[in-house]
Amino acid sequence: MVSQPYLKKGTWTINEDQKLIAYIMRYGIWNWNEMPRFAGLQRSGKSCMLRWMNYLRPNIRRGNFSREEEETIIHLQKELGNRWSAIATRLPHRTDNDIKNNWNTRLKKRVISENDKSVPASTTEIYSSVEENSPDADSSSLLNIPTTADFPEPSTCSQGST
Picture 1 (cartoon, one colour):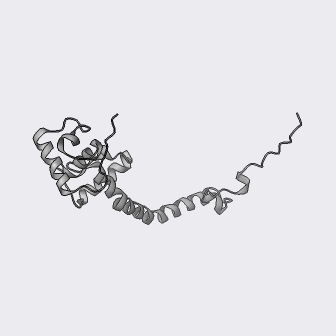
Picture 2 (cartoon, rainbow, N blue to C red):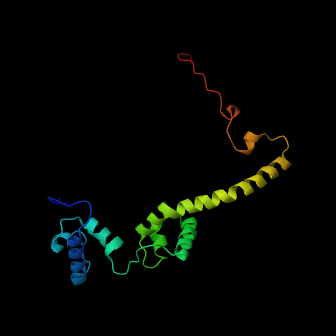
Picture 3 (cartoon, rainbow, N blue to C red):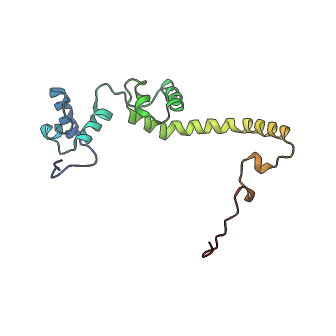
């Protein structure tokens, strides 16, 4: 691998964005690692690729997510976990990075608060059913809190005796 003598890092300028857009519109995408040099950019190929994929592509929808998109993200995150690119394939014109950022800044908090609102009723039902089935159960066993009885005694090893 040949290292570049100087690669710019940090925020992209409008001039750099225009160079990248103009180059891709004229020549297309052929090799991300070689493209910056031919486009006149002092950026890495990875930086150019991420800038194009997440911000500059013409068909990207930017801005607030609709309620339907948010519900889709919540449903798919429960189903697929944090596989943002898999989720993005089911939301046209949204990037995996944008979906991930929306999840981490807004939706995760909403899901947690909705779950917290529903927890007291369900936990009360669980506690009452456990208490009905085992009247001798103490409160620590209901909450699954470990006690000293749950841990084994430390073994005593005597050195030198075989």
